[in-house]
Length: 219
Image 1 (cartoon, rainbow, N blue to C red):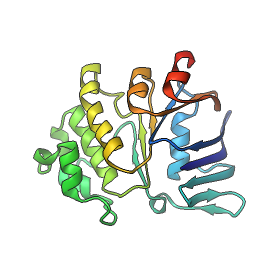
Image 2: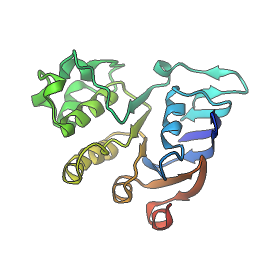
Image 3: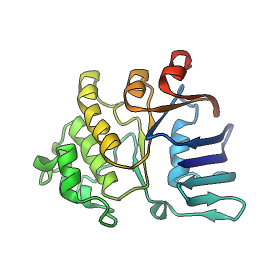
Image 4: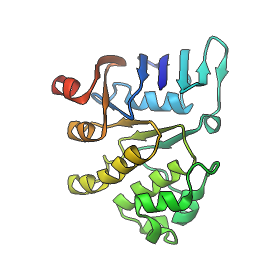
């Protein structure tokens, strides 16, 4: 369970959210500028709320009441941003192992699940878009996260490639006990990957519930 009850202020924009996320995959959908990435950044510790609480399971990572604000590296969060942010001076193996924490997941397990074994000695500049996404996901998983944050992970690839990458995300969802918060603009993608959908609009929750009930009227 992920508890989100906080307020973030960014210039003229304010995000107010009060939700408990219990699903394996919660998709955040809504128009551009509605606050989806801001939610991920707040969970990851990259943006600081002006007040509220953020908890990942029983692990409170932010509380304005107790003045608790854990640094990003102490939050046990795996984050794949839109630009995937792989290190170009490292090969795939070093990228995947960067930030490795604990033995919750073995390299062999992650490599097999995402089928990146043949890429480990390759430079990241030699990777296709789909390969870069899988390597970024492998790197996030190797940090043994308590929650996985994916910010439009398939937005930069064409639709045919998107449907080839989705099965890898489904394997992560189905085989690992790691809750996922997944930002997307694609309703079909959200229907396929998520069991809960949170619709944001202008920094507020417009609707929340299962995809079949929520997406038919999402803005």
